Length: 464
Image 1 (cartoon, helix red, strand yellow):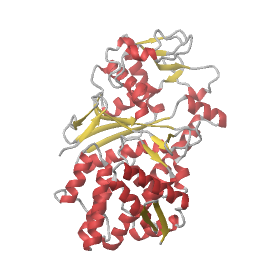
Image 2: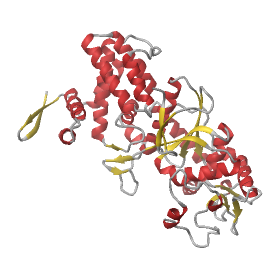
Image 3: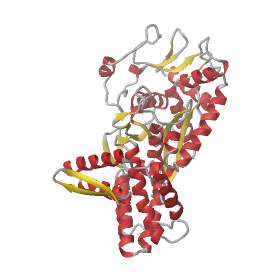
Image 4: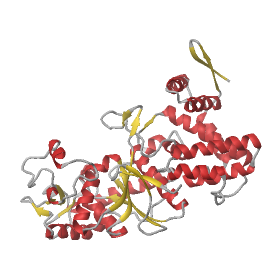
């Protein structure tokens, strides 16, 4: 099976065929750096780190651009609040981002463009759109994109203009010709600091968010490229607007494959500052190591929404220990070796990953290899386990060091409430006939020294 991906644009799984055989150009919307990265950001960057790694493992030469938005309303407000220059704030937050995602094993992209370095390209694109009649300058100085003049608007979100009008919310006297129009260039406001404005033929101001990504991606990857990714929440309006302004300016198809990762929930509710369930990457890394957090993300398909809690993170750490235990017993020393994809387990792993980056299916192969290694004292199974793990960015530490650290972190971690929660989750899995999942939970508890006994009155437990 060759690589197949789910394309949001076509709403179907398609064979992946890059524009240039053997080469892939990919752009992912990165961070707006006014604060520390939270778990939702980690989920997005992890999703496309896996895509990046698997494309490389599949033999593609990948040019990967992931931008940094370093000028934005939130950035300006935060800099003013802290009474520091914008550049100081963004440098501080960029360094923090690199530290946090580095702990998760997220590879640096080929290019990490900053929006402020591409203002000339943005202005050139805006000028082209205005000359083509797709943009206009409002009385207040803003330059807006005229949505109704672009025939293909709504193709990514699947929304018609009438549907979009039904949900519109637009400020009074904003200068737009149509409520659906969006800003390309924001005129400077009197109360904004000097370092928040740029000089242009349209007057002092700064770029709108959407034009930033269009200009940076086209400058680095060309007018048409292979993959554009980001969180599901960016599908509309951000990515829809990128298509309109990019294709409006160039007259070419913007992107062939659109990939979007699913939402992250905290204890079954969407993560939100207003709900008080908001966690930064640093919050979690105080209690769990980076590889455990990475492994936790890998257990759910990148397009699926999934739930975060301490209980499931504990379970992920226990499962990762099982893999490292197999390596500690049977894996030869040294770096991972090149994978022989003709081997049955390697072929099964590849089949899973070629099915729209199905990491849960790939992890199932790793656990099967660990079981083979333990049953047959097989060095070859353990070596393949380590090599396949490398394509996902896991299982590359010294097994003895990981197990020692994990044991120290896990000591006393599963209290009675956590055990009861896992038992309840196991009961739900059994009721849904998800027996493999139920067995995984039983094994995870057993690895923590918790023995279960099923009876007519329910499930009881004791510590070994």
